[in-house]
Length: 330
Image (cartoon, rainbow, N blue to C red; front, side, top):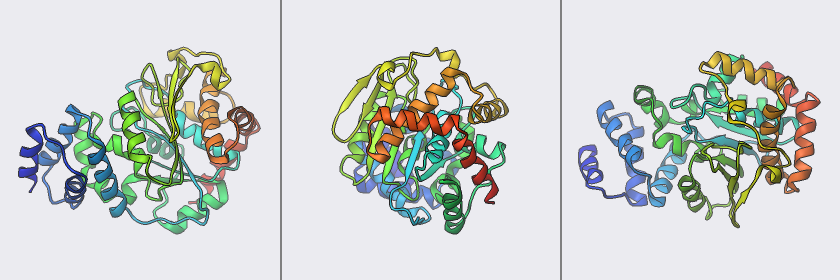
């Protein structure tokens, strides 16, 4: 089947939702050799998938994922696609802890960095967080700290079976694109960072018919988060708007102020420094801006009120308390 599928794709054709669904399930079986999987992934490195393809891929991954249920009906995921090539510190992961410190129930998903230096899993594991493997452990973490982390390969057979190929390719793939859309518990509230306007529009089309509440953010200079280095485009169900840094209550920052370093160790050290309240004003403000956007979406309150809540969480040590509480539940 894979040979026929590849020949079909190499002619420039796209898949229907059903074809995409079947193809992803086939790859998830682990029955395809690595060369075929690499060829399939390469197709989507040469072109952006269609709305139907992403919808089909997403449906397959969520259907195959280990089912996870939480007592809290509304949880938040704040995540980026990665692959923006900016080597920033782990902004969305830090923002997740700020949200947790503010009382938001965060069920964050993530993975090791494949096209970037340090993914969420890298920085959390380096700093002593052990990944939960069961629904019970995830619930215990959430109850104790307002946050839990779902390491994607533990709950997605599809990701597990392509991990070696992705590691060898060392470039962003369709799984970078799908990652933010396929949190196994499918949170009702999502803040997703994307590295291009086209991907933002694609996500909006995929998610707009769902019951999920979302904000998709794309900095016009290429960051997959609210970077404050320039204007940011925000996609919601209702509209698409462009905001300058002052709209987020902060002054512009310089790109070099967001640099995380070239190693997991340097990123992990900077992560803890910011979480302890010892970050620079620019580092803190970028984290707070992203957290505030998520809090305002989750709580359905004004962004400016959410900024004050996020600042209090970071500067009072509440965000750090959430991290400590998560680390204790092993």
